[in-house]
Image (cartoon, rainbow, N blue to C red; front, top):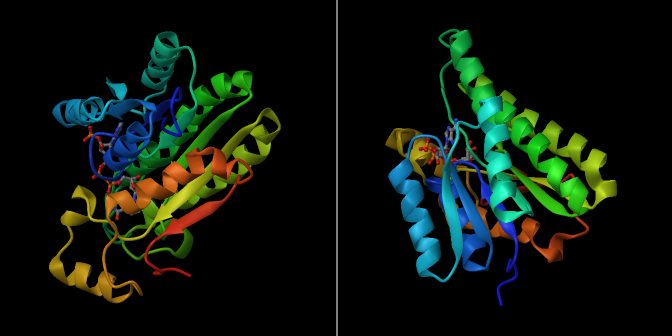
Length: 248
Ligand code: NAP
């Protein structure tokens, strides 16, 4: 029997990249996984098909997680369908990179809304159910950039640092109800998000990674699965860095 047997999980942005790997990892160990997506319907369907082929269960769910009404509706539907919610992974994220002089206010708002506001909205909706249950796990996908900063990513770094503040404040607030809240801060991971970068930027980034390679989405997924598991019951308000030693 898998360690997440009988658990219901929502992974935001579960259609591609790191979110996809997290959904597959939780599904592989028995969780029923709601694979949230915004635009990539076929990819989300494919993740669910893969989970089902491995003996698991779940459903894709379209929702722009930066939209408050859509988020409320998604959580309403999920709790109506499954009657419980055990794991929320706030993973959906975007970048709009440029030097501050070139960034527009819309580039700031888009990144903050998709990466940070979304996590606050989803955590608010999930907390209601989890506090009633007196159990639950919320895991926010931050970034090492939220810890160390990175030129050209003022908007993104602000969103990812914000996620760490959210993680700690909510961890303190809902720990008495048996819900833990943690963050995972990935380094440089091979996904669509990083495939857009030039070879030069990639090579420079890898040269700063002591373990000498980019991370795999699965490297992040294993850390998330640990924080979602019973083994992490006494861990809350923490940031687990998964970056091959890049930031320490
Ligand atoms: P990715 O391959 O670009 O995938 C992004 C995912 O987010 C997609 O599934 C996308 O779904 C979803 N998404 C975007 N906007 C959304 C919205 N408004 N509502 C719902 N879903 C939305 O990115 P990734 O590299 O896997 O990154 C996943 C997370 O890890 C992000 O938060 C990112 O900041 C973080 N991270 C990544 C790295 C890295 O090196 N890759 C490092 C540190 C942190 P649709 O396609 O359906 O829109």
